Structures are given as C-alpha cells and as structure tokens.
Image 1: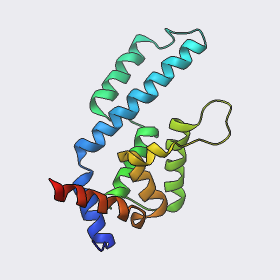
Image 2: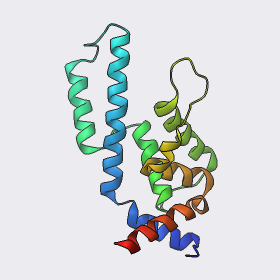
Image 3: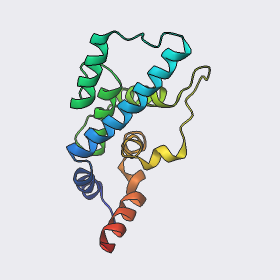
Image 4: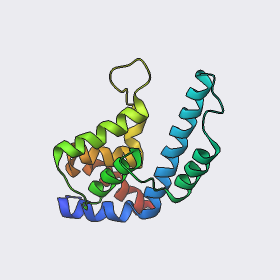
Amino acid sequence: MTWSKDKAFEKLQEIYTDRVMQDEKRRIFQQVYRHLHEHLDDLAVKGGLKEEAEKQLKFFKEYTFMPGDNLFQSMRYVFLIARGEGETDPQITQQHLNRIYKALFQPSGLKNPYIPDSFWDTPLGVACLIAEEGVEAVYPILDEILEAESVY
C-alpha cells in the first residue's frame, strides 16, 4: 500500500487503542518494578519500600496512571505522537525519549543506554520510532500488519 501520513496515523489510531497502551504501560511497570526490587536486594534493603509506597505502586499499576513528570507520562507522550494526536516539539520529544531509553535500557555503569533490537517490535518501541524519526519510518511495519490482517 502507498501510505500517506494521514492514512498511517489513521491505521495507528486503530492499533494504539487505550487498551493496548494500558497493557503496554502495565508491562513496562512490571519490568521497572522488578528491576527496582532487584536493586533493593543488591543494596541489602529488600524491605526498603514502605507499605504506603507499595500500596501506591499497586494502585498505579492497576490504573496505569502515575501523576507527575515520570516514565509513564513519557510513554503517554510518545503514544499520543504515534496516534497523530500529540505535540511534536523536537526538544520535548527528545527529553521523553531519553527518559524512556534511560529507564529501560541504561544499566548502572554505562554512560549510554543499550537498546536491544527486540524493543523496536513492541508497541512502545514502534511509538518511540515514530516520535524519533516520523511516521514514515513505520510504513514497512504497517505494510506487514496489513498483510497479516488480509490473511485472517
């Protein structure tokens, strides 16, 4: 198919439903939460989170919303861009992308994040690609999706 920006964003709005975005936020939350607990163990403070903080984190996981300027707001920002609904100030976009990459892929001791190729196949990875390079970067992915849909 020959894509235009409008057609691509229309398809992406179909794909990036609220449900998909919530599920992806929950998946990332689990990943970061597990990582947090692993580091607490590394520091010999396994019970380092107060009960109140644990309750609040479970609430955030359930409702996929965390107030303030954080990783999940950055995810929301790039998802909105992927749907063609968000701002596209390059400086702000880069700040959100850097937060996502650092939180998920920058291990202690490394100056820059190492992003595995498999990330670009996830809903968040595709949204980051769109935010970073523009919707044109995902035309081949959209072609694959259309091809898969025509099989079913």
